[in-house]
Each structure stands twice: as structure tokens, then as C-alpha cells.
Length: 473
Image 1: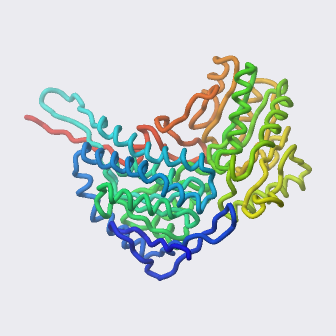
Image 2: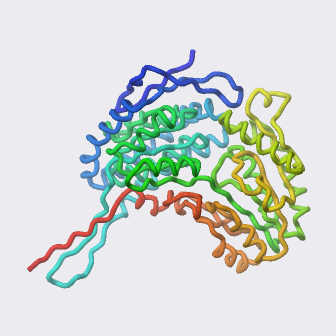
Image 3: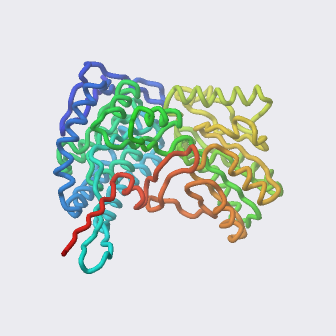
């Protein structure tokens, strides 16, 4: 029998106002999974009201107290990682290594912002001996966190930790396909001492639960990660600007003049992009711009490596049926345009992988820059390569996109790599494998979203600065 998951509102389970539940599916097997509450406007109303009641007292607490609570939530995530991972596996089909990495990062978000909170403060402004002027960092109030299906727990913690650290209350609306881990996170947070009402979770579809949450007058700020079109629709529902998260992202890799060891690392990074969450990551490598002199060698090595990846062991399935069909549709469109992949380009049709939504790792080589597969976000285990002959051409092709979330440059000439990095239109650029972590601000240029997640910068997305000036005369 499938387990039914209710909303989490005001520190307790709450049945959906309409009494209905939505089914989920294990994408690795297509077998039925648990059921989640089908939320609607009355459920959103209850959740926002709960958050409004709880938020002021939380905001009045000293930062040190809020920090201690966040640390305990991080500990709870670590202690209950096995349960969280199993809930996530059941609705995403992710591999054990992927699940472990995401659980560890989820705990790290709370610990990081607990630490940042202890070191964060306002400043004084010198206006002479007769005045005392200073700034305060104050929360918005109630934050709506609308999170996607590709990284459910990780994305939730990425938003919740800084939002709560800043003194806000949160109403989270996870994807209807992957809600269970966020609900369990809320229960763990309550057990760790987070006051009731500060974290509420309403499940359901975007139109039925997400839209009324985004439009609710009690919500002061939205954090959203998903498609550009949905982000714009959510922003359009509000008189105040929403904060759509990093949507429709691309990453460009441009090895040029690469040393042999850097070439090895660049190839490994490209292969990892296929395997990591089966390419269902907004910052995953989608286009590889490769210097003509090494293009064919790099492609051959990548094809050889991805050919050894095993479904279910090295990479998981496509999480939703709609996305599975979209990726296959891209293959059909590329075939109609005369493009043939050098490997992959189809779903698995035999073996255990054929039961689930597994797509063969796919590489299109030497693709024209105007081809749809080179311009659209495929969100699957797909790489597209394009050769270039000089730095200017590489830069022009890297920037010839509507997106600009993450880029990577591999070059034996460090000065050249940094020169390119500073001219690439992307919110993050890694040079020769430079780490991009929780501490580095994450966000995009152009259509890749507004605002920043991660780093100290994320805290400022969830608060506002007030200036206070006192005359001492």
C-alpha cells in the first residue's frame, strides 16, 4: 500500500482541504509510489497564516539563537540522512552516490548559514559626534519557496537555510513529483527545535498550489527555481518583483591550448556532467567548445568514457515522464534536421533500464551553433560539441546563448583562461576545475535568473537594509 503524505502546517500534519491525493511514480521502474496531498488555495491560506503568526517572534530572537537552531537542523539531516535518501530515491531514481552527495550538501547549507549568521551584522555611519547612525538587516516576513523536481532536498535546503537565518518564515511548495523528502525535512526541523509555523510545506501542482502561494498578499518574497516561462508567470502574478531562481541554465566548456593533464581533467568533467543526475542539473555542461586541433581526440575520449557508464549505477533515470518525452523529442528533431549522434540518441529498449526512464548517454559532435540541440536546454544526459579556431571565436560562441548561469574554461595558459573567464557572460566561471561550492555565490546572467543563491550573497536575498539615524543634540 502506498504511504499518504499530508501537508505540514503549523508544526503538524494537515490533510488537504479538498481531500484528494496525487500519485507518484518511481522513474527507475515506473512502479507506483507514495501519494502526496493535492494542495489548493485553502491549504495555502492556512500555511501562510501559520507563517505570519510565527515569524515576528523568530525575527526578534538574537542571531546566535537562530544560529543554534540551524546547527541542530543540520545535525538532524545528517543523523537521518538514510531516511531522506530513501524518500528521495523512491521518487527520483537517483544513484546512491548522488543521493549521499545531496544529503551531505543539504546539512552543509544549514551549518554554513548558521555560521554566517553569527558573523553578520550592520554597520555604523560616521555623521559626526552629534549623531549616531547605523544600519540593521531585517527579514521580509514570509518567503514562498517553490522548488523543482531535479534536486528536491538540496534545492529546498539551499533556500530554507538562508531564509530562516535572516529571520523569515517559509512556506515551501515542492514539485508534486518529488515532495516526500521536503515534508520529512520539515518534521526533522520541528524535532530539532524550529518553532511551529516557521516552516510549512504545502504539496500539489503548480496551478493549484503554487499559483495561489505566489499570489498570496501575505507572501513578501518568492524564491523559485524552474523554467524561464514559469518564473515570468509567477513574477507577473505579483505587484512586487518575485525572485525567480536560476532557470534555463547552460554551461560552456572551452578547452584551448590545453596541457595533457588539463585535457584529461576536462574530459573527466564532461563525462561527469552526463552522469551527474543524468544531466538534470541547471548548471550541467551542455555545450563543449573545443579547439579544432584537439576536437576529434576529445570527442573520441568522451564517447569511449560515456560508453562505459551503467544505468542505475553511474547515472539515474529522467525523473518525470514529461521530461523523458521532451529529451526524446529533441532527438527526433535533431534527426529530422540531419544530425546524427556519435553515441546514444535513444532510450534503453532492453535490459532492466528499459523498465524505467533511462536515456542512453548521448554526444552530438561538430554541431552547427544554430542547431536547436546547441541552443536549447535539453536537461538530460546529452553533450553537444562545437570546434573553434581562436580565442575570439570561442568567446563569441560561448556568449551566443540566451542563458548564462555557469561556464568553465580549460586552458594551459592561465592568463588566457582568466581573460576568457572575465569576458564570458555567466554568473560563475570555473577555470581549470576551480571549485564552485556553497561559499561561492550562484546565479545567472541574461535568462538564467535573478538574484544569487549560496555564499553570503544569498542571505541578502532574504532580508532588507534599514538605516536608523539618531540626533544626540
